[in-house]
Amino acid sequence: MLSAWLITTLALAQEALDVGVIRESDMAVVQKNLYPKAGRTEVSIQAGVMPFDAWLTTPNLQLGFDYHTSETIALSAAFGGGYGFKTAPYRELESPAFGAAPYAFRYLGSALVGAEWSPVYAKMAWNGAKVVHFDIFGTARGGVSVESSVIPAGGLAIAPTLSPGLGMRFFVGEKLAIRAEFRDDLLLEYRSITESFALKQNANVSLGVSILSPVKRERK
Image 1 (cartoon, rainbow, N blue to C red):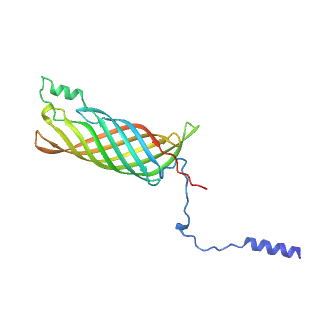
Image 2: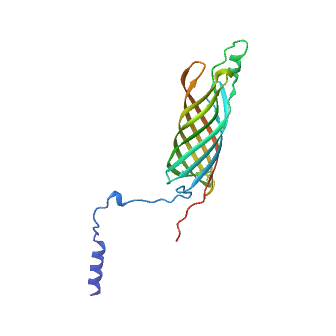
Image 3: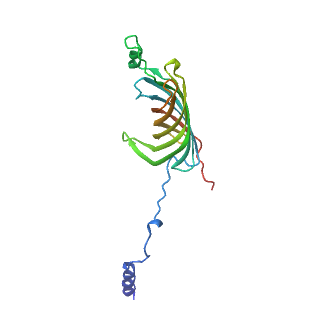
C-alpha cells in the first residue's frame, strides 16, 4: 500500500499544471526608486555660462522650480539673469584699427515655463565602493528673454523664446541632488538699427544643486 501511494504521488508531482496563457499585460514589474520624485517640489540654483558666442562671454545664474506630477513628468519653470562681456575678437573689431563693432546683443534675463520628462532613472558603481543614483531628463519650455545691444544706440530686445534642454540629476541624498543642464534658447529679436527681426541662439551650460521637498510616504 505504501509503495503504491508513493508511486502515485510522484507521478502526480511530475504532471505539468496548465494555468493557461499569461498575457504580457499581466506581467507588470514595479520598481521602487530609492529617491522617488512623484508628488515632490524641486528648487534648484545653477551657475551657467554661454560658451559658444563669438562676441560675448555670458556668466549667468538660473533659478528653477519643478513640481513632479509623477516619476517621469514635471511642470517646470526657470528664471535667469546674467550679463555678456566682450570677447577679445569683439574688442579687436571695435578698436580704432578696424572701427567695426558687431551689432551683438547681451543676455540680461529670461523667464521660461514648460514641462520636464525624465525617462531614465539608473544607478552606477562609483570607484567600486559607492552606488550613485541619477536620472536623465529633457525639458521643453517657452517664455521671454531680455537682451540689450552692446552698441549703445542699439536698443533693447524683449524676445519670445523657445528653450529645449537636456540634463542630469545626481542624487546625494533624499532631499539633495547635483543638477547639470544644457539649454539651447532660441530668441526672435527685433533689431532697431536694422529695423528687422533676427533669430538668436543662446546655448547655456549650467551646474548647481537641487533641494527637494520631503518624500510623501503612504500611511499604514
